[in-house]
Image 1 (cartoon, rainbow, N blue to C red):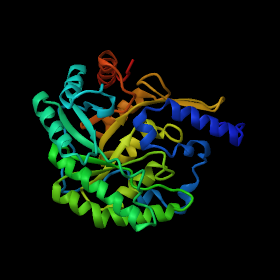
Image 2 (cartoon, rainbow, N blue to C red):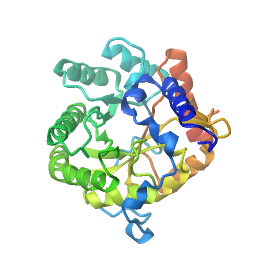
Image 3 (tube, one colour):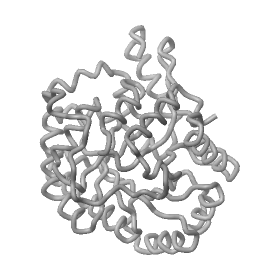
Image 4 (cartoon, one colour):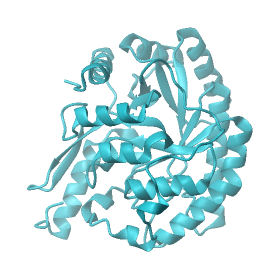
Length: 336
């Protein structure tokens, strides 16, 4: 952000961003303070060279990414849909033109069954599950009780995915903070994922999608590629969020670097005024993302899986507009 900002000014800008974020993002990304101090030098604690993280993902015999058609398919995050019964919410997604929904973790058996029935009744697939425990209980914690709770959350998410026929569970793998160094976050999270999460993922046939977020971790595409590769499993892939990297990178660069590692995608736009030190999430095509370049990058890697809009919620007209923007972008390279 602008070097003219004082510490108090930075705090005000962080508050401005937090208030502009959709409610589900306020919960999922409560470490937004990263944006106020993004020299991005933290990666120095884990050495990396181009030879260690190539742009070509290693071949595997694991499950192939879902290919809903000849090209990417539109999906929507469950929190974007209007309140109501599960059946009503799935019907709203269908009416807006979406092909699938991304659910969130639930331990409620009745809710699991309701979503399953709504999916069957509408023909709207549940393609992924957003794990909800990794922010409250990071896998990178030094506290075994916290890690245990995080693992339990992933176990529930994986079983949700299996019940719904979803192929992927989104995971934020670690959080760097005052008590957790970058190296510790890397080592601890990889160990837990390998030993306690991937065995169940393999058993259930569900891929763990590692997402890059504002957690002061995995701050470059080379680094994220290396992290995923070191998990050394066909059930560990990348869940790429187009908007999350705009503060410190270019989505099209990340896409080409991660390549076939990408199993799912989040779509949202991001606007930055570096002179004023302000930034905000926006609807597709209203921010600073170079959408034609991003579309070309996805075409270059041959991505044909689900792309989920992760924006604020709204009514039927709003959802139809968001869906149309995605379709327009896929067809013409521009959302608007």
